[in-house]
Length: 78
Image (cartoon, rainbow, N blue to C red; front, side, top):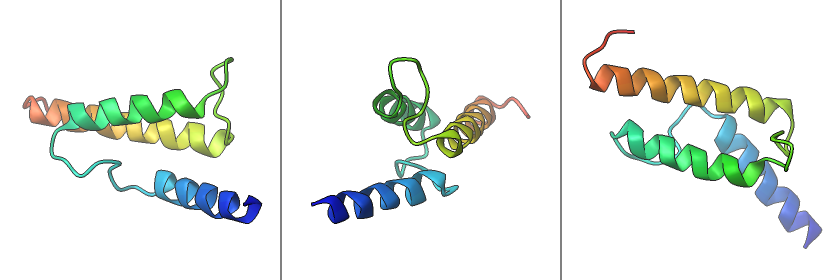
């Protein structure tokens, strides 16, 4: 079981750090909701990512990307 856990956590890390969307949708609002739900599961009670600073940086990049997509959808150039 520990090796299975390690494989799954590595897959989660790889997918999360990749630049692709979490959910295949053209709606940035749905992507934002998915990110918020996932982040809620990946932070400890103090608000720090349980997987470290790489995940914090990836979350920030994802959040900025989603914001740009939302503004583009509204017709506001960024």
